[in-house]
Length: 339
Image (cartoon, rainbow, N blue to C red; front, top):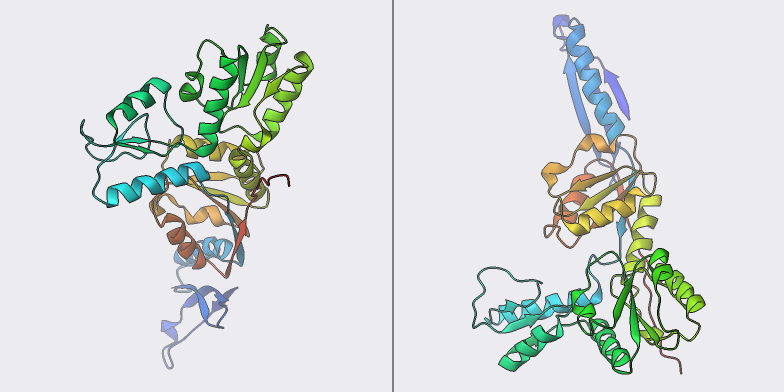
């Protein structure tokens, strides 16, 4: 609510001023807002006051914040991170094999940590030959790697249904037998023995996209064999639906995380497929209050690279811009064993 006042000092009409305010009542009934004043004889100052309060009036309002409830990292990555933190907290510096959560100096004699995405067979064998290994390979990833080796061992070509990411640890399980497909054009280009074809679905794939590729593979190779469907990971599908659902419901989307990080780029791209404007926020200093003008719903999506507590700090800042309600929205898929 904006109001205009003409306060005066008794007996001194020359001290009259115009005060312009913008305010709202919080849930406890307390008035919160801003005010600015200018002399009525100074039209330039009065216009400046009106402009400033007008800008804040556009930003102060009742809002909902939609938080993307799906975690920034899948369960396999969170499990690996927890294992890494547990070991390092116990004073065991780990030498990361194949990338992961390494920090600080890593020495040749440190125990070897295998991250969630796994490592190539030769690297894994060398690590275990040393005998001091913390194996945090995601169970689903490990199961798919076993399937690739098993299918290749029986003489099949193994078609890996993949997303946009790299798959060295999976492909190297049987490099001569693996073919990677990411698009329908890749399926069309295959020329295989129809009796000796198997498939697996790589990590980080949207399950619905994988289903389309599998349908094309089955049409071309009716005797196609492959992994058990319990081994499909739905984390990417859940994240996609969550982010797009939050973006669709929002007037503005804020993606929290390190600018330029792959996850931030990916999440920004997902959110941008909806109509709301999207901004990347690496720290509170990146946030522009003017983004809030005339918005009543704000989506917040957090990448794994985001600073600790950044989401909390941002929500606290938003709470000063009008009555605020937090809404957690997420999609979670669970598989169940058939009785």
